[in-house]
Length: 279
Length: 337
Image (cartoon, rainbow over all chains, first blue to last red; front, side, top):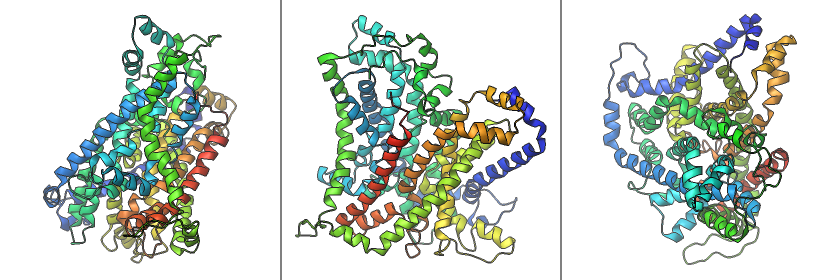
């Protein structure tokens, strides 16, 4: 990352400080909307646009938001959703990636291209037809229906396949000599070695499905199934003159677990997204 | 196919997934790859033969069933259903040929949404990529406080778009919003950014750029960490300025990353519509309607599923062209081995 060579460039010190200024200006600009939201959410509504240092802090906006809509249920729904999607993606992705990485079968390359196609044509844009499918399956307005189209993830399969391919075949063969079957080899050799990739993938997947909106909006129609994003939208779009401070509090509340997780595990988050390099 | 002996590092010419994989230093493949035999001459597949065939397909089956069910089949079914009328009540769907497409050609809202989407893409993609590159260079360098900066740049990426849009909606609110307060203090007249046909699309673009730049930064950051510092040293010895080093060395080296980010950005410009729901609902007067949002409206507000299918085919065509460019043109030398 840093090098002696770069030090020699420092004769242009002024341009560096100019850059430093630009970097910080951009950083402050980028954090500004969030800082603004935090200010509004933690102060009484009369201070929502008045910035005074002595303004009293309050948690009442959060309490009001929590009581105004069934957020506890929305949290539970989202939690079930992301857990279910992640578990399914892990299992299906691991099996498929193992097949692509270590087995010879007819049509493998063609099938792999078909899988990669999903990187471009995501279920996100196939809402009309997938809605019809869910209707036929009788799954409309269920949490399962929100997650089902995402269970098989081309991204996950691709990522794990790339990882499995770096596993030395000696380890694979050694396990087989000891009499392990294909699934045992997978569980004993491949999965443990890919642990950092699983973690990276989990962070990306959870944040993606925590944030997903359009498909859940379409396929759910009741409090019992709505995830947080849809719940927040329903809550904030009721034109009953809901206080901005309360909406902002609800907004922060729904993002809080991700935000706190991100701030606590910043390094892992950034590295995960880097590791997960391709989508 | 028979790549059993290829060492791990030889699989990383694309500088993306594989580059990211190796960047952490904690990746298991990195230390282990040295143990792999360097290109065994008679590379035999681990499991070939009849059992390999069967087991391979069995492992693949669950994922493939779901993938076909919710990606490939709906894509084809959409095209097929776009040739039929929407079933209404007792009237079943009947074959109408290209009527839905004819309707589309005469549909002003469709053209408006298409143009909006084009402007949205043109307005957000180059800007967010340029900002992402600058961010990555700064965060990768030795700036004071780069920990904070990295967090500040990346945070919008983690947040739900729907939540972010709420914050920005308030930001843009006439009279009360922060933006009005700033422009007001500077003596500018009040302006309803989201209520004006001329500014609404631009206002939503700002949100998209703000949300995406930090995400793209990550890819550049991963690529920058792969570039050997000796290059900078060599450039310095040659007397190259920092700008020259960036222009002649770094930027060309980052080209694969730029192309990759570009493809991602293109896909996102079609897919990203969540903020429209919160901020504008496509208005005023469809000035901020994007294609996918219009599909939603047609399909789930007007319940005209046949026409929505025809509109989806347009989106699929756009994505198809993108995919073709990616696989055929960009990946010519990057085989997924």
